[in-house]
Image (cartoon, rainbow, N blue to C red; front, top):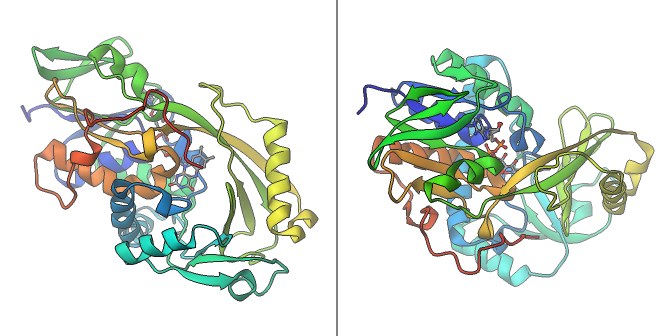
Length: 370
Ligand SMILES: Cc1cc2nc3c(=O)[nH]c(=O)nc-3n(C[C@H](O)[C@H](O)[C@H](O)COP(=O)(O)OP(=O)(O)OC[C@H]3O[C@@H](n4cnc5c(N)ncnc54)[C@H](O)[C@@H]3O)c2cc1C
């Protein structure tokens, strides 16, 4: 069965990291993307390496997030060394404004040994005239998502992964209950196993094989305000809106949550909303120009728990999707888990909570986590 390569469907952060894990384990890998690598949700992401309000999530999300957060510094260093493209892993800390949910947050932080303190914004951000207090998470870092994706793609090429762009996978082939390949642009490509990492498009691909996963597109829009280098140091989260300061002075403001199907256009209403939110957190931002706006389609899932597992009836068909708001932070551990399943090796995470046939109470419409 291992005479054929493993096929990875989708070249977002999940597919790229899954392909990397498999290639590093010595498997021959072919990766197909219907458009271009790393141009969808993963490219649009703010790159925060933590769920927002992490105590609101179920444990399976925290387990993946913790393992990934630990993996990120070495991953980024290794990518930068191998490719010359630095994903800019930056441990800036995240200030979550507001005194509510303190008890839940502290309980969660103690259970998972995550540093969390009550602080005033003036303490962690003394250079700016910003007011407020809340929960300070000093260990939270961010990466520059487009750079992470470019570095991953460059490393995959070095690892001899065969990358095919503008190559849509429209189906799978099988003999009885065993997968034998995929159909790409009308041609059959043999595969010993397939890992579907097709983000918001996963459901459309797998539905006809009896797998109607509750994964739907959830649009998110962001803007950028260009400030001088060093203007803002920590990330700041207030309710559903946040600021992420890049090393070059760009301050990302995110993000909306919109159920708009597969429509990826940006809107004036979102731009105004995000500008108002940014000025509400840091009034000094009003002195600087808004330079960019973009949108991406998150693969939503109930409670934000991704689906990582083998098809209950088709052997060799594995899925890694549904990372919703947290695909960047959850990616390294999710890729490791998916690779464990492909390679049939023991891993450190229990796959059961991510299984494709796990019970989903009232999950017909994936709930929105705010
Ligand atoms: C505005 C915004 C901000 C975000 N901020 C953060 C953040 O700060 N931190 C964080 O952790 N997460 C964040 N996210 C969420 C994160 O971006 C997603 O969870 C993650 O990118 C999902 O990765 P993916 O690889 O599954 O999907 P994608 O990046 O969408 O990749 C899926 C790929 O599959 C390809 N594909 C689909 N169907 C097929 C097919 N049939 N054949 C071949 N190829 C196919 C697509 O072309 C695409 O390239 C944010 C998302 C948005 C939109």
